Length: 146
Picture (cartoon, rainbow, N blue to C red):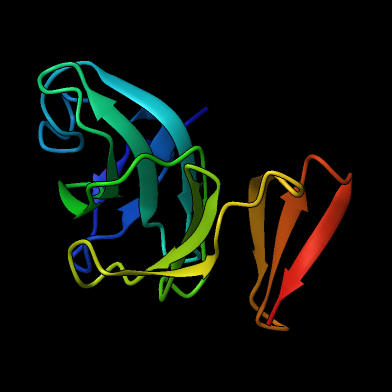
């Protein structure tokens, strides 16, 4: 048995977020058919989605809450990871390892440039140690960024 998804006064979701859709939350997603390339979520119920809308085809990173969506950046991303505390969103964009400030539109820094000898493909962030782990497909190794 699942409970209906509702929005609390703080804007956080309650109940089963998976049942949220455009009927319950019409502003949950941008308009058009959304193609998801990667997603992540925080400890606070905030979701981040990398993908594009069929309306314009522009690659975007969006911040999703139950009752709204906000653009974070116009960037093609193949993999993302949000920090649990919602301070950062890490990602792979055209081989570069980057970090976004979700509070400022299009604000990001490059952590590591694309390197064909490493071929970065995935990210995960350990909030307890503040270490970003990045997979290197070409070497079969995992890189650490502090």
